[in-house]
Amino acid sequence: MPKIKVKKSIFIDSSPEKIFEFLNNLNNWKYWSPWIIAEPSATVLVNDNGKYHEWDGEIIGSGNLQITEIKKNENIRMQLNFIKPWRSKALTQFSFELSDNGTIVSWEMESNLPFFLFWMKKQMEIFVGMDYERGLSMMKDCIEIGSPNSHLEFRGINTYTAKNYIGIKTHCD
Image (cartoon, rainbow, N blue to C red; front, side, top):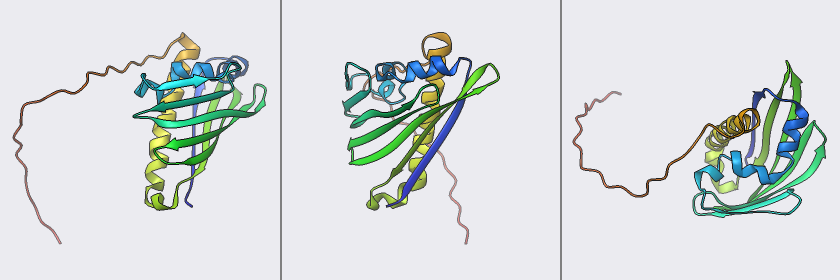
């Protein structure tokens, strides 16, 4: 099975302690998750202690995430289980490194693609990496200014008038 590894980092103007407390409670994901913002109507459940999170949506699929190991103010490790669109598992983690009056937060994922999707390995690393960068940016805003500087507006299905385009056709060997 093709292995996938993604790691993205961002500098946040805050202490590792504050960031750790924010991320160690999965109730806070609703404020910065790059997936939940894509489908606000998805069903999201978090257990009382904030260590287990599950979701189900038409766009974001379904699955669950559980905090499995913590090293206070150093890292948070999680088990990620996808159910839809296909079953797979991943190990994810956040790590925190003190740097110049702030913290470098890294978000990592290690997983395997189902064999039949071997051809998508590079694309999946790019797609997940883009989601991680967007999520880290929104998390940074939540921690530094209190809310993400991002909003999606869903306008529903629209009809557009037909357009004509001019193209140039070429051929080469």
